[in-house]
Amino acid sequence: MLKKFLLIALTIFCIGELSAQQLLSPSFTFSHKKTAYLTLTDGTELEGIIKDIDRKKGLIKYIKIEDETGKKHKLKPAAIVHMYLPASGLDKLSKAISFLKDAKKWTNQKLNQDLLHQGYVYCENTQVLVKKKERTMMLQLLNPEFSNEVRVYHDPKAKHTMGIGVAGINATGNIAKSYYVKNADEDVAHLIKKNKYTKEFATLWGGCDTLVQKTTDIKWRDLTQHILDYSNCGN
Image (cartoon, rainbow, N blue to C red; front, side):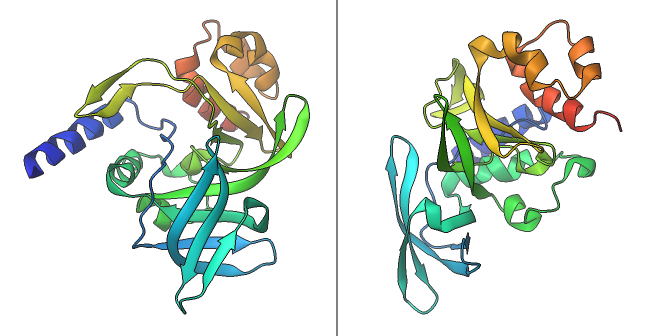
């Protein structure tokens, strides 16, 4: 069993070496033993153990936390500003590995890098434009290590490309076909889709003429590099 686990870890690590600085895969399972950290809208800093997370159509409907005094809290996303949740199992492994080759110049100092390097998942409350209407959602941030200029969130309804699996784990490929994206000067995240990326490329990255002009072959799989180029525009 240990050999199998190490083989999976090595495979994920090697693939990470070939494609550093990629977006994280979203987590769906969380530890019920490690401490979760929540910041509430009233300023309260809440620490406790996750007892339950209820979802509807992939979105968090409420989260139950038991704090260190034994008091239980049932919170809706609207009551939470952001939270760090401890991923469980191989979710944690893949996230910890993904940070091994991150360049320090991209680090978002506003986030708790220590928790992120431990494999914690960062989720935050944000306004999202859905079918021309604004909604408030609690979404997982998929680029916490380079999110100063552009924030990329998991789309719970996203479809995926085909991927290569190792022992039941998608090691490569399996790229989401849509994400919610919010630039630093925007208050509302909007949906970008693989099949519309080429058409919307100039509008999405319009703040960086260099990126728009040099990119003649627009590919969805290069989204992460486009984000890094946009973040470095003018530097």
